Length: 242
Image 1 (spheres, helix red, strand yellow):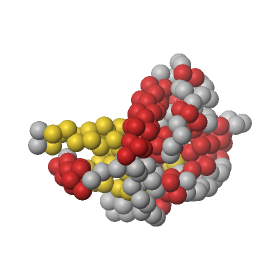
Image 2 (tube, one colour):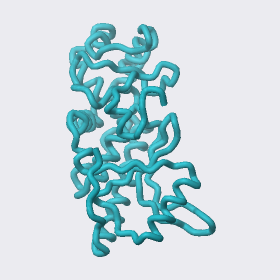
Image 3 (tube, rainbow, N blue to C red):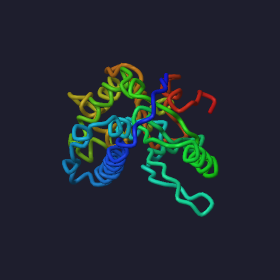
């Protein structure tokens, strides 16, 4: 649950902008890593280098199966103005949402705040507030750290193909990690699953304990989406009917 906090002071603005640029770098670097499987170790350690929760949130959103696309948006055009946004914007099946970290938001006067809301509404982007406690909520936070730690794990193309084939033949296109392991005959299924989740191949509910009994599906399979918990959808103000 979002806990409203006081706005940052004017002196905090430069730091907020630096954090925003680091989050944008995180998103773009991860995208390049996913599309360049021959060089999986090029991804920098931006999670550790960013002092704020901005990078942590970016990683969580990149791994979130409800998110189809993620961008860091610096500004939006509105009535011949460029309105500063400096937020992560996630594209969901129901539309776009802007994630505002209330503990780190730059100071805005009432006019700037009103202009921001008008610009978001004009571009049909919902505003969702989140605080540090929400970003650190378990087990999602630990699951994401664990999965992100496997992003350099090299998956042989033949094994990746085997995983996709096994899920394509499974009932409802979903399997537990244990069943997937038995189907393709691998000894280290958790490392494999975490690597493929971090690469955007597999989807998993990040709000449940990560075990061999966790259910995974193909993230690209929009016809058979992975059932998500209320906690997973609730972050975006959604429910199972959205």
